[in-house]
Length: 485
Image (cartoon, rainbow, N blue to C red; front, side, top):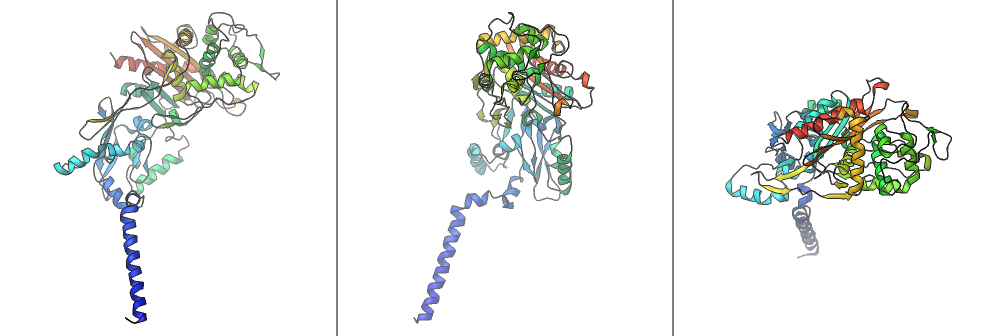
């Protein structure tokens, strides 16, 4: 072979070798990456070629699948009463992916999860059509409906927990939205989503998990717990060392109480009953910022919470003395989610034991066999059983004969705490109405609730936790109790 031909042969051999290497690289090394790549349309077509599994509440599907028109994606997600369940499920869209449970549990719902490998393999031999698995939630349908009915057309959120297990019983956020309106991939779906994103009321914001508010006076139960846990006070009916007026530390500003309530040297019980700012502000100052942070950490503050949907961290800040005093009454830079305040009420109702909140009770294969069953998990010991029972006595006084009487349920022991949280520059905005509570029956506490209401249409003087939020909490608690009869 002459020299030029030899060079051409070698060059061609190199090209063939490069082609083989490239082919093997694509087929074996990058196979998984390319198979799951967002621009691999065949993967998306296969994903929507069969019906998606359902999300279950009270044994019934709250979701479904519908055939699409004029699309190579055969099935799209639909909801039964989408606005009611969107804060729980999130959305699943052919064009805009998914969120919350629809996203986190996508493997089970599409049938592609490794936990369903045996089921997929078996269907290859039986010839059965591929199906997605189901997600069984911990939600209580009656409690969810009561939460939405109570919030009505107001902005706000409700979270209800089972104190003994941490199971989420209600998770409401208003205004809400219907995920079905943009579940497809048409221009109409895109326009519907844009309208929701541009809505000034932010219907797609999950206020129960992703919005933080000043907790106002509901936070005083945390300050009371810190005082008991650190030995600042022991007897909830003994007088505290709380002068009136009381001046914020390093300041000439006097901390005010609402109205002419009896707050001078008030006991812990009376101070919580009438929501005395001076008592709890001084209490927080006496404890100091570090001890307050340590107590809030035990309740779950200062870190994200996963339900499995992520909830924003509630923050009790490192701050100076006057700001720490204000944070101790739920103001200043103290910020919390409704979920977090439900966790506070839950821990107190559960004799100090804080359970991990969760909303997935079971994952099911397409044949309904469970592939995962949740086990309750203790998150922390927020306070001792003895001190938790003291705080319970205080909260029950609030509902029996204090600011929280609107939460009373005949024949049921209810503990609660009202809150009216100021916000805006120099408190210029209308306040938020808060209420946290729990109910007791002969079998312990089946439910703890947190409610926050942003009622921009109400008169400022009519906004209060006892007036706006407590009745909602009462109805949610009653719904849970009645559902267990």
